[in-house]
Length: 376
Ligand code: PRF
Image (tube, rainbow, N blue to C red; front, side, top):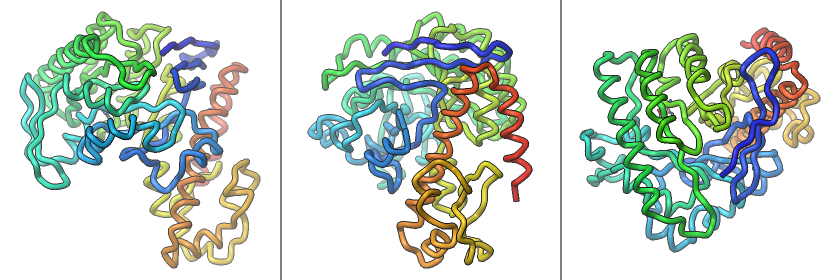
């Protein structure tokens, strides 16, 4: 994997770049739709491409449980399995173990937990999580980490952060003893932690930078802390992370969070918001979001967002999609999902264009003013 910064905004830390993988190049800043179980819910690979999606995310935890490593390897890896031939990033599963599974016990060796599917006992270590990601064959892998809750005692965040750094080191040395299985190369990022304690964040970041990863993920954010605290951590991270490596803010976020993070030097994002909300009928417009389940759209034959340049807005009305949702037709969920993905792709694409023209800040303010004014 290679990364090159192509343009730096002249007033903020925003930058555009190009991430090169063996499955193609990704312009940054980029949003990665979430395809946890090797599917961006209801949307095919060819449809993702049509919405100009460059890279998607999948999850080691879920894929390890089902279909399991045997089937994944027999399929020739995830790209082959799901027929997605573009870049793909996998999260390590650490975060999912904490949010989904029962009976976790964390030790220096790794994390013991019970599967949320059948209660079977499992054990993730920094080493076997790299092995599983070799089998999945993602272009970019994440090491096992621990994401502390917010708020958490400083002493806990310190101890946990130190262990995350040691786990990252173990992941790195194990990576060097293993090889890709399918002929394409696989990058490994480091994940910074430290919650909102500036000194712990700084310390974990410096340690990981010394280990020289292919890129850096900023973990432990968007877990309930005020947005201003997250922005403060991003400003700190910007001063510590090497300029020529990609930065990925994990699990973020709303359009506003994303633009504010881009302004602070972040290059990559993933979040379930656009796809999850779509399945509740919430769709994005440049004037804020609307809920298509509402009866007020029953006779509204306008598109979701008038003049928005995507397939769903060119083709269907609010009234039609509302009807589909209302009677439980699965096409309704799919059209909402495709629309929201395309909205997030438009958001990051437009951000890139404005960074290149040195007009990012003005555009951000203007976009947010219109977007927030329209909120219900
Ligand atoms: N670690 C990992 N995945 C994540 C996070 C993290 O801290 C977050 C934080 N919100 C989202 N996804 N491995």
